[in-house]
Image (cartoon, rainbow, N blue to C red; front, side, top):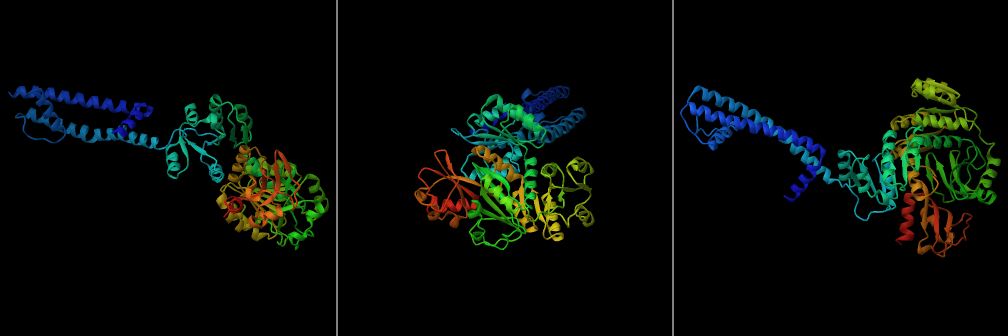
Amino acid sequence: MKFVGSQLAYYLKDTDFKRNYKVLLKYLALLAAVIIIYSILFHFIMGLEGQDHSWVTGFYWTLTVMSTLGFGDITFASDLGRLFSIIVLLSGIFMLMIVLPFAFIRHFYVPLLESKNKNKVPREVPAGTKNHILICSYDVIARDLTERLEQENTPYFIIEDDLEKALKNHDENIPVLIGALDNKDTFLLANIKDAKLILVNRDDFFNTKIILTIREIAPTTPIVAIATNIESVDVQQLSGADHVLPVKKWLGEQLASRVNTQHAESHAIGQYEDLLIAELPIHNTPLVSKRIRDTGLRQKFGVSIVGIWERGKLQPIKGDEILTHYSVLVIIGNKEQLNNIDEIFNDYDVNPNPVLLIGAGKVGLAAAESLHKNGVLVNVVDMDPEVCKNVSPFCNQVFSGDASDYKLLKKAGILEAPSVLLSTHDDTTNIYLASYCRQLNKDLRIVSRISEARNVEIMQKAGANFVLSYSTLGSEAVLSISKGQDLTVLGEGFTLFIIPIPKSLEGKSLAESGIGAKTGLSVIAIKENSEVVTVLAANTILPHGAEIVMLGNTEMKHEFNKIYVNGV
């Protein structure tokens, strides 16, 4: 009874209930009026037949007839009385047995169940919750982001305004709150003032409304917004967002930067302090067929090799790997060191033919603009003539048609192109095109976008050399902002880790620690008292109370924790 009482208490405050119960009460009032009228007519007709009954008897007879119970202890003797009984019986069947159950279920029982479901999903964060991250939609970026937040034990909550989605998330043990995203109370219950940041990831128009709502009650809470259209970036910033991320534009630029690596020159893809993280393709250079330890890049240029791309997979460095024509090194060094490498390798393997871009939507358009800006010729294939028209100012040639048409691809230059960039919005289509293009040109460098990170492996199997998902780029950007770091995107799953040096490693040298050999992580810097040391050697000591900056994936980090933190 206590539970039903609490449900009803909430239900009575609900706007939908007020509308429903008014309809139900009107019907019950109508039903009561009919019963009263029938009871009065009962007395009148009985009087005509010379029978005398009490008012209670009148109500008793009316209800038994309308409900079809018909005990038969009180009956009319005249045809008028029997005709009246038929009318009462038929109206009772309609009003009590058909309309009343429907009205009760529609205007009371169903809303009561909905109220129960609404109460099932929390509306506020637990007391004392601070430094949490709030997310306004559980989209592909949020799914990837929450996985990373769980790995780092960072509290987060999804705010859903759709009951069905909220219940689904709740049943899957995802921390979720239900509430209207344009209602200040929703964010007050989520303790927005003590939140670490809030990710606003709905459509551009709704994002603006949410940002204005938040800023009214939490003027200092960091707001990170996702912008679908580049035109909405300024609008959301002016509305109060601290960071607006045009992820699709960034994705196009990131993919374009990987296309450029077909040239034998380093290309910076990230930075930490004064260190640049860059990729260096070695196709047709003297490094082909050499082992990593025999390249001499560290001795000659002072750069460190921290990873190697082989046919779409970023591998950790052990030292005995043999480089191939398809290898792309991930190196770390300062700007001068990378420039010195470029002076030697820049003349190798320059393919002057246009890069082929398939799919020129928002991501493809951004990629075409970036390539055009860097002086790279681009041929575009897209089925939509309007899209082709939009991208034409940044292209060498535009071909409107189906990318699976061999004659069209051949005409667009698939057989001579140094690279192909797949940027259609459909993962299945990109996987198909990657496999098809790989069959047509074995030496082609294939760079592709995907929407879901779970499709990375199959895309690599299809022949892609580099794959980057919308979800990974978005989640990495949000995490970098939450940590106050610059965005560094190596590829799917690889990122920078800044970890306090465990007690088991304090006082040891890098060589003695065996971090690289045991975990695959690459140590790129040591941070102590806001001072960052980026020039490291085998005898560099890991000091007490400092932080170590490493490059790798989450599996490598877990292995690091298992060996050095948990002592397994």
